[in-house]
Image 1 (cartoon, rainbow, N blue to C red):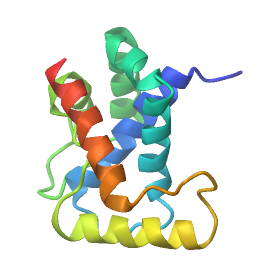
Image 2 (image 1 turned 120 degrees about the vertical axis):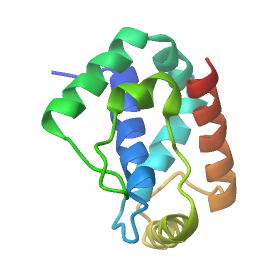
Image 3 (image 1 turned 90 degrees about the horizontal axis):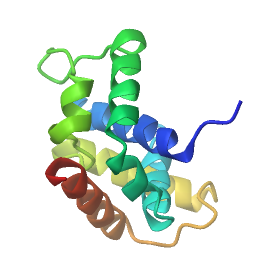
Length: 136
């Protein structure tokens, strides 16, 4: 079976949300998810995915059932809130530095073949996607 590109968007967006809420201090090859979100946005898929509330809730319910995670404070991550109005796609503090380092390594290793945008530009694009997701 083939996964809809819009579902891929929500799967990646919720994975990124977890990273941000957990304020992770390590991440191996995780920056590919931010890169993929930016490419999906470039292709217009993010806009379509954001308009599909039923799909967003379906992904959220599936993640809550099979991939329950806690945030940095030890509280359960609310995936339904994430896909409704609380999506976080840009990490802060040490997690942002970890992600920047991971992105640089992935670029240096040739893992992101079409990537040539600076990390800050990638984060700006993800912040714009986050704003669209949270503000409708």
